[in-house]
Length: 193
Image (cartoon, rainbow, N blue to C red; front, side):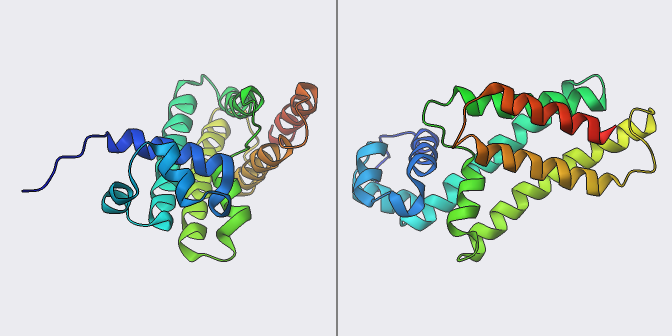
């Protein structure tokens, strides 16, 4: 008879997100995972596979949570410009309230592993594509209501916005000056309209 697990898998997976986000894949040892997740090594292997499989599951969970957050925020906006501004401000607010200044888990994964690992590279690309598609939808809506010029290439603007967010997510590792990020947001909004 199989034993029932005496832990919540989603809770453990969320803890794994936090550990990998803080230390990176290479900086997180199996002992870090056992200690940080609060489960035995055998339970970890039985439930999640090896460290690499757990990392991919954690990265995928983060991707899903990020997508949900973006969709919720952009769905509440009253205009394209407001949606973009809210999204940029949300990113900055979350990054600046993080005492550890970890940046973005997906961006960190891309920097650490994407050029060496096709599965990580694919998850990073999928996350970027989700954000790009969200931006394209917002921009096209703004073009339809006259907020954004129709002569502007929606995909090019979406890629610019995506890259702006990645730059912010990396920059927070070296500065916590809110004015620095406010300048980026202000300039970005001037470019898109």
